[in-house]
Image (cartoon, rainbow, N blue to C red; front, side, top):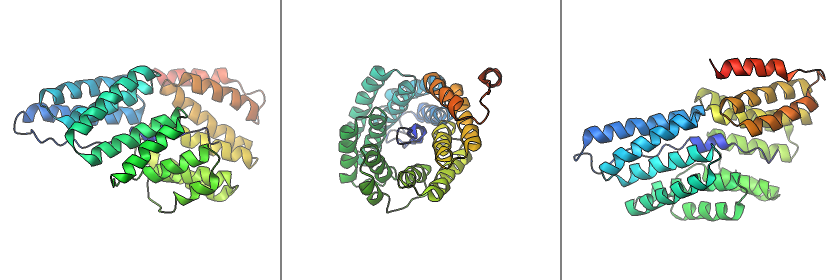
Length: 286
């Protein structure tokens, strides 16, 4: 279960759209702000291609206005979009450029938010030491980013330091990320009722906010929980929902692995994925 990371949380990065140069080009900046917001919305929906286009356009507008924070925010969004399209080397180059903009802006809160975002991507790539270093840098700058402590707890879980993970979840917050990581910790400690409660809270928050990409991980985590509690019907239902989202967001390799798992846990051993794939295809082409 620890391998299932709520990568959808990377999409909840809403950097400041404000600019210290609004008197220079207010119309251009307004357009850039709108594209940045739209890019974030598309990230949540899992439409990475269109999100990337919007981020690239907003970056162009911010560049013309000499808005350093706007440039950094746009490139961060573009990097996330590229990463989710498995274009990791390109994403890394974009992130490096984004970091330079944030450093030049001297806005340490925005820089800290960037560090946390980058750390989450490093966690996804199993580069835990580098991720922890960035999270500690963000902590040192006194950021109010609520993702830091759950992110450190997640690293502890992934490195088999379950007891330490609990320490970083002491200060509860109302983010879906907090509830997701808390649910994973409860799962590891075999507190299945608490795990279910926390994961369901994460799922409900992500549904309410329309964070489609985060839902896939919430649903898969709940599926794993129901496997442990011997409720294969629910496990199968939740995993199938996760599969559909991963296909919709073009996470085909992930979806294929889940489909193989679904065949193993489905109470109906004759479960025909061809039927499901038919409806999935209709959904994708709606």
